[in-house]
Length: 157
Image 1 (tube, helix red, strand yellow):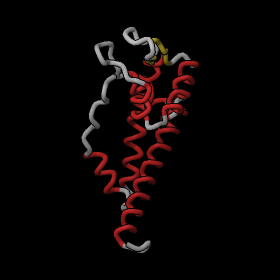
Image 2 (image 1 turned 60 degrees about the vertical axis):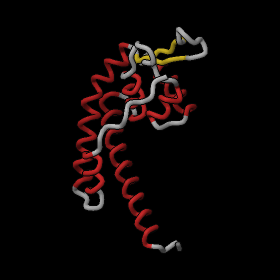
Image 3 (image 1 turned 60 degrees about the horizontal axis):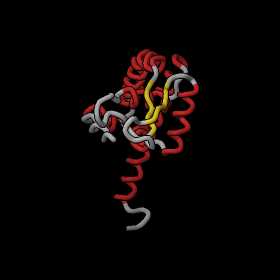
């Protein structure tokens, strides 16, 4: 294959369109969350992922699982957790069965903020998708997003 191979060009164009769609959606949601709730997209995603944990066996995620869920490195996730903990939105504690494990839970204040922000996130996502659907290059990807099944549940620790 050469650099001008039509298959490679099509792949590159598809990737560029997907990247554009992601960037537009994320920027739109970021503006809405920041202006109304003082949250970034990553902060919202972290609160959302952690709010889905439960107290049963295997109910809490390890930091690497959280990092995978919010699409950040483990160190960036740790910094994000620290920032939200400093704001009183999260709390860390030692695992009762394995003292080496540290878990993170959303505080009552964090849960309240998340519930206030959830409709904003959902509306901003819908708005961004509707806007992108009007672009002929992005419309097929919007349809794919809308038709996608939810991702499988995160593996539990």
